[in-house]
Length: 144
Image (cartoon, rainbow, N blue to C red; front, side, top):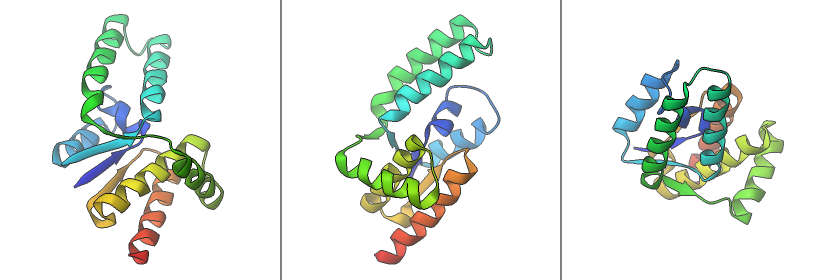
């Protein structure tokens, strides 16, 4: 299985919060773990927010950043190309998504085109984005 993680799922690999065990199980079963390059900045932002709010002590914050940096090269990362950006714009309109959510969806669909829609799993903790990913994956599978 190829697994695509949006940022909400990626962060759960590094922070023990609800859903973290489910994401770790998916990652353990995946041959390839993919995400968009934007996930790095979004994850760092989420970690910094947790530190500011006191949910991550400074030492844990530093350690998690180090592990994220070590792990990052092992992920298949998709650049935000012109084609991805244009597809994201269309997807944002079609599924009423926020900007970066639509970039994640467009990136997932590119991974699914390459790996096969039936072989690619999408992981997010955003209900609207999950519904959009399911609908878009079904549409992609029908076109093949």
